[in-house]
Image (cartoon, rainbow, N blue to C red):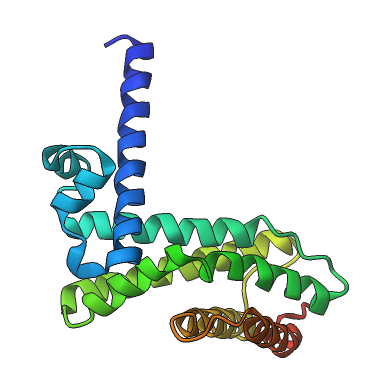
Length: 202
């Protein structure tokens, strides 16, 4: 196969995968896990179920494709933010706002749908835990890239990351019950003040 034709085929394959992930996210968010069948996802993406299974051999693979996509989006948002050495509380507040733009977005609800619906499946739960660990490692690497003098992420910083993300994810769940943006902004401001001392680099 000529290189140009191969490139076009790869591009089409990537586009189809993206369409399937996007379709799965929409259905998970708007209709819930029970409606996120391979048939409905394929139909929304405008492809056949055969094409879906070509790119994602099982529904589990597609669900983890969704998790990969959203986790990458969050880590990229974090990694693209350069914290200055001074004014950490102000900078952290801005970073939290950027993360909230992702976590607070409707798309993130897809992750909760997957977590809740698969919680009783020991195999999938273990896979979820491993996925979470890889995501946290990506956060740590992004933090190190912001602070090149650091050789590793220490325990306090790692725990602070966990607290930051757990808190924001908890606020995300509150979106099901509250729509008052002022409430969320107060909580995010308090979170920044709480986390800032824990992320101070010496």
